[in-house]
View 1 (cartoon, one colour):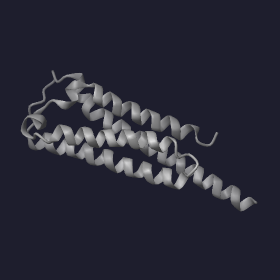
View 2 (cartoon, one colour):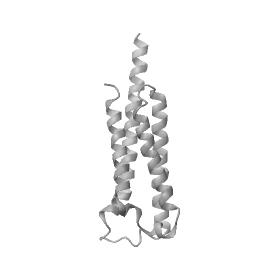
View 3 (cartoon, one colour):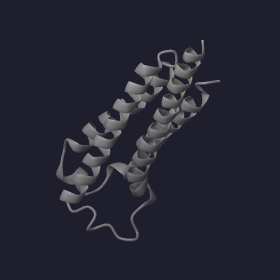
View 4 (cartoon, one colour):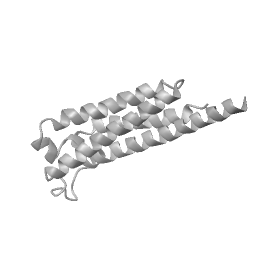
Length: 140
């Protein structure tokens, strides 16, 4: 009962990160053409975040470790998203984006933001569980 909502948020984060991997247009653009290391590094960071989210689901008995893993995955997604934005802007990718940019291109920026928000919601739920358990221990 206590863990159910965080699990849903973590599964949604994994889903958004999986959508990012399925969208081919998310890995095209100015940064891909200018920086050879961009795609493997970003895919590795987003893959690490997805694997961390799956791992965090199974850490429901150790809430403090689960919380620290979720915070670490938030940082990983944030770093990968900043890398994506900064490299695309340095390569002139945003200046050349017009109204006919593909939906998959925008999924490349929207999916990590949604995954970060899901990690944030999961962390807030874990914090509430920690506070609930702490208050129940005080009552004993």
